[in-house]
Length: 408
Image (cartoon, rainbow, N blue to C red; front, side):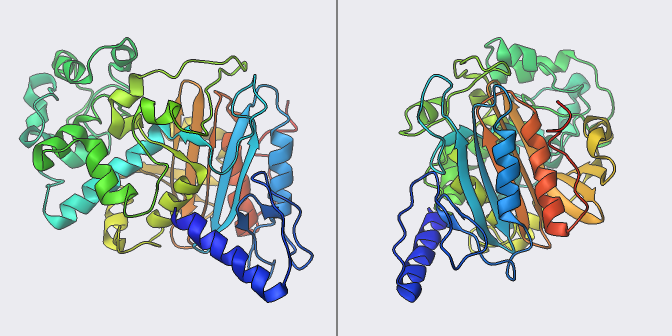
């Protein structure tokens, strides 16, 4: 991985300069005397003069979070000013195992996968390989909307959830084992809530019509093109898009219910890979965030990220979902597989993800090239507050218990 190469080089440099012998496990170790922040997993934090975030404080908050009942395992990564500043695993890969979560533990991204589809679409559109504003009917025969509305819906509408369907249309059929292409055709029997392109309603089955776009224009599977265009060039070696890739990984986190019960890894959302199919370790998710910040312009050009992250539609129901953060968070919108917010006067980009037994988030400030990612192997909800506590530390805002650790 790109991150691991950079980090190992940095460690070697420190050894050469200070002639210090550092013995460090995958779980992390105490910081050498010359650093004011902790050594965390494979990433070294820098001095307070170079970093705004207090990583000792952040680590202490996470350690306290991990005391929550039935929170099994967690992996966290932070990028500050474009560089990896924190990378660490907590807890266990399974409740009935002593195997620890490390920076190499593979989790599921769930709906963070949608940002991959949006970025790929923007990249191919910039190349002229697809047309974001062309009708989805030019590419997909499986997506059928009421009254033939698929002809009036663009690829951009698919990737920004502007098809006029009700929220999560026919996800229950997907979870019941039906073929996604058959489900998309059955959407013609529903009723539109608005004309395509005019309102927002979150989708998974319909969103995956973008798989048809890729297969028609390239003659390859979506997974193949993602690896060729994005994951491969970025050095994201642990990233994959199938259930088999997850469960055969040497180091992977098993899913758990909110009550801590071990679950099976289901196939449902792997069958809509654009919407929820990606797996990786935390290091590769951090690399992905850096790429979204413009750190790898030879792979993802700045114009591509700007297009993917451009706000296209208001998402008013997000205000209700995130009401606990409304003191600082406002103006929720959506782009191409990305959510956009105003947070205390700063524009943030990100997404949340959840499939049975796994949760994840990514949140970053593109202008500051600073953000945080996390993945955990349970249906536990509290870790979502960590993203806002980390950004508060960076912005120097007054502390708020967004993790709700003092609220039971």
